[in-house]
Image (cartoon, one colour):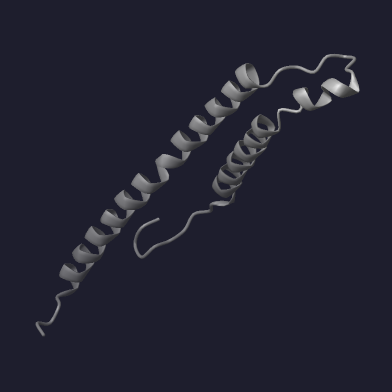
Length: 100
């Protein structure tokens, strides 16, 4: 093997760190886009698919107003948004080689 001169290894390390930072930024850029897409889905669900319950409702009509599929989709999407935001809030500065 060819001996490595100190300035060469430092340059190589900086290059790889900068490439790693580019990759991580590309991966993390998708999180806000995904969260806002899910929030848009929540808005569509609540404004178009879910109907408000009347103040008084006959027991026979209760099954028609449950809207189980739409409510499940709303709960699932809301959970996904909270999962993403919790992950973002838990992120701390991480050192990866020379990169921060």
